[in-house]
Image (cartoon, rainbow, N blue to C red; front, top):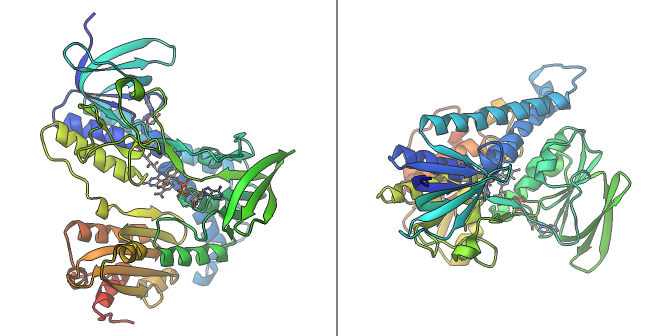
Length: 473
Ligand code: FAD
Ligand code: NAD
């Protein structure tokens, strides 16, 4: 039987893989995408970005109804929630989006290959071969000019702790809890810990966050992360910083978590659920990388060059499985770039213009360099800051807690970074990402008209403040 041939076979259908497949098909490449799970969309759509945001929205509406309506003169009594219904909604949102990827595959004539993809030794003509093992064990092989590894990531393990997926859980377990924990202990004050901790705290859980570093949200501008910490503490989250968690042991329906402080003292806390959120690691199990000689670095990330190609010609990698931020849109951008390169174009990703957002309340968002990064690199910069407090829209919204910080080059005024903590920070950061992409100066941004009254005026004021010209300060 003749072996099916493709121009490109993508392994993994997360935001990296499925977007790469669509762009490749748009550009006329004969495209197949291999996915081992039942649904398309990867971590992001199934157990990551989307379900977490669905629960963040439901829990935020509940918390806002309880705590924020009074100031508007709205009285509500007997407020309660139905957790089962929140979960149904979460699943429905996920189902709609993963089904949408199926439809996009059909529309773009992308072949979906269901099963575990493994790269095999090339055929006699030098074409790569990918073997797909379906759930029932049957194997099929396809040939292709190019392979894109988009196999994503999975939660990192923590030495000394074994997940039982009931009381000691990872992010997937924390999205599916059947009841609100009495006391949720979070290991790791990173993005996952704070987002999912917020969900359960808003629904009534006591939440204690144990973090190894002496700050929260590593990678986020330190001043902004500190403001976020204060806001989360006001909501009831408790933080223990400088705590290296070493063990978690089940005791009936509880878990005893033990950690060591920098002064070597050992402490314990008891919770009824423990979420281990200490990062994610690239996932390449069963892809056959060693067999075909694709190199990984010491953190298990597939090594690629500036054109996303591994050391084996014709084999590429994108998204969480390779270097850089583990973000869905970073994976998508790389997927588009690879497809364009494969079609003979010049795919490119500007890593200085990739925004990141933490969907807590207030939100935390950033793009470009942090103040710490610029200081460490010895880049001369000016800092413009503006608080949410004086902004008219922020007052009308009742969202006066927050800060925008703009960083621009001291000599050229080019925007180098922007960091925001406050309501809708995730939406506000978009204009700065575009400004950085266009090489704008803080003056360019400040001179652009910003509608009144909007929160975007705070971004403009921060840009004006780079030239010490803020109007409402
Ligand atoms: P993935 O989405 O991990 O997809 C990889 C796919 O490959 C999976 O479907 C997997 O089954 C498949 N696969 C693996 N090996 C094989 C194989 N051998 N054969 C066939 N298929 C295979 N990022 C954001 O930008 N914003 C957010 O709000 C956000 N929230 C998150 C919340 C949570 C709880 C988590 C866990 C992550 C979140 N992320 C968020 C991160 C985001 O999900 C990832 O950065 C993104 O999914 C990476 O995309 P990817 O395509 O590289 O890999
Ligand atoms: P993370 O790297 O953001 O945070 C992990 C935290 O755990 C760090 O602060 C680390 O210091 C701490 N830690 C490690 N070992 C520890 C120990 N023994 N004791 C105490 N603390 C310890 O990782 P994450 O929160 O698991 O998220 C993983 C990835 O998923 C992130 O890279 C992020 O990009 C992505 N993600 C993004 C979003 C978003 O964009 N909104 C949401 C969720 C996840």
